[in-house]
Image 1 (cartoon, rainbow, N blue to C red):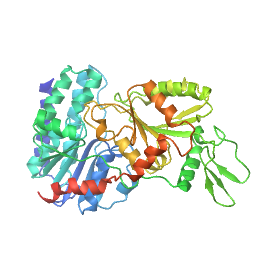
Image 2 (cartoon, rainbow, N blue to C red):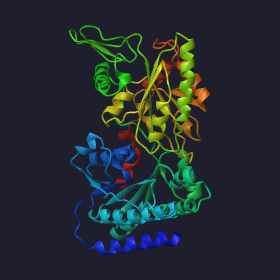
Image 3 (cartoon, rainbow, N blue to C red):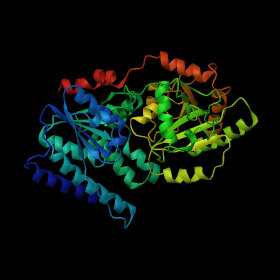
Length: 464
C-alpha cells in the first residue's frame, strides 16, 4: 500500500519536472503568495482570512482549492485575489476502500501538481493542514524546485481525523501520521491554532510553530435590530420556524412580523415581541467529531421542562452547515415531535451567517477535537458577535471558553439540558447569567483577525 502511494507521488514529481518548463497560465511573481486548501474554498474561513490579509498588505494572491460553496463577497470582489479551482475528479467506487483511498490520493497529487504549476513562481505558499495527504508533499516539491517559501497552517492532524473512521491502529492512520511528521519538517515556517498544538508539534514532531488563534473577522458583530428584522423576514419565506404564525402571535394589521421581530409599516419602528421564542444557533460540518444526538437529547429534556414550567420560553434551534452526516440527522430530527421546540437546518450564504449569530440568544458547540489540540472556529465567530456559548468539553477548550465568564462547558446531554433551563429561565429578562455572559463579551478586549494576523503572521512574509 505504501509502495502504491509512493508510486503516485513519484509519478506526480515526474509531471512536475515536465511541466516546470511550461508557460504558466496564472502570473504571480515573487511579490505574491499562493493560499492552498485541498478542500472547498467557501468552507475554509481561516484560509479566506489569510488570503484577504495578504491582499490587503499588497500581495497578489492565488487562492487554490475546490469549487463548491461560494466564498465571502470580500474574496470575490478583491482584485488582488484570483481563485484557482482544482478540477473535480471522481474516484473508482469499486474494490476495497483502501484501494479507493489510494487512487484518490494519486489523482489529487497529479491534479494539485498541475494546478500549482500553472501559477508562475510565487514567493510564498501557505498551505492548510489537514488535509495534508498529498498536499504537503506536493507543495513542498513545488516550493523546492521554484525557490518559494512553504508555510503550513496546522488546524489539526489529518491522521487523528482518519482514526475517527478507521481506528488508531489502522495502517492508513499509521502512514498518515508518519507522512505528516516527516513532510511537516520540510516547511520553512509553521502556524498553528493553539498553544497546546504548538507544544505538541515541537515535542512529538520536532516542528517549531507560532500560535495564531482564530479570531473573528470584522463582519462578525452584534446585528442591529433593523438588520435582524430583514434577515428574519428573508428566512421566513423558506423556513417555518421564522414565520410569525409558527410560534408567535398572528400578524397585526399594518405590521410586518416574523417570529422574533415586528415592524410597524406606518412608523417604520422595529420591535421584539415580549413573548418571542429564544433563538439557539449551532453550526457544524456534520462530521464524526460532532455528536448531535447530545443536543437532540438535551432538547427532549428541555421540552419536558417547558411543559412543566411557565417561566421557560419556546425555542427555535437553527443548525447551519453542510456535511456527510446531515442527511442522517435530518431524518432523525423528522421523527421528533416537539410542541415547544422547532428545529431547522438551513444553509446560509456567507453574508447571512454573521447576521444570524449576531441575532441569536445562545450558541451551542458540539465540536470535539480529534486530536484534542484545535479549537472550534464557530465559537470564535459567536464570541465576535457577543453571543454566549455552551460548548462540549475537550482537552484545550479552556484556551477559548472561560466557564461561567463567556459561556458554559458541559460533558453530556443532561448537563446541557440543565444549562439551557438555567440560562433561559424567565427569558428574555435582563437579569441572569445569559445576559451576564453577553455583557462580559461586550467589555472583553477581543483582538480581531486583522490585528492578530498583522502581529503574528505578517513578519513571516516581511522578514524572509
